[in-house]
Length: 383
Image (cartoon, rainbow, N blue to C red; front, side, top):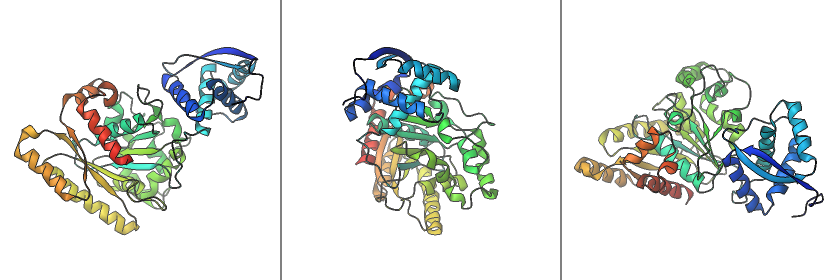
């Protein structure tokens, strides 16, 4: 690819950038057959002409070297001083701007937006959080840009991945849904910068203020149709992702309705593209809870005249050594047929160890049976 400047008139520049951003740049440049130095040059030129950009997480950065036209890095540093940001932050923002304006050719734009997967079951302890995280990790590992949303005020997903809950007074997803905060929702996204995800996996952390979301939605004048509140809040970040995955609270209230509505089949979207994945256990109480959830889905669909696809059950923490109760319950889930059983996750120690160490399962133990089970679900989703 030819450059609009003398390729010999360059100088070496070194900045400190997070590994995930460097990896994403390397992959995207290779996909588009562009030299990394030309991509960075274009990004810096665009950044200098653009309005101030959102902060990019640069913690833990290591040295990144490239070659820019002589004098361009000096100009970037002057602009950084004028914007009161470090040069490393300016370089990171320039690369992020180039990446966002040069999407991967592997991702085909969809008029209906990203695919939306809602993990829900009002029964606690069935593994909504672990399966949502594991499937998100597997989708990112396969090259998809994934946003993982901790929609549960208990914040287990956020904490299990080693991140802090948002402060109760700070901006949050719930406040954006209620129109109680300013700023951009994208500023709350946290990159999960573990090996294997290549800058493709992001977390929207939980905040304890979501405990009040049901009650506030019931009286809010900000959202005329309560069920649309989550979708309206997420509109601003959707274009950045191939998948948005929502880890729901154990609830049957307004909050759950907003998640179900968000996962509905949108106009122009193929059936089964988005929808609900239902983590369950191989025991009777999960079946009772599913009956209640199924009724809520049907009532919402009837009231709103929408379709919410039930993509399948994920039977979590399965251990055939528990005998008849486990094996007969698994068979009962399979016999339902629609929705199908799309995954069986064995009850093994790796997931609990990963949680203890605040690591993603597919990073902590990428070859274990549980990790492969998460990949199997991801493959079913992508098929």
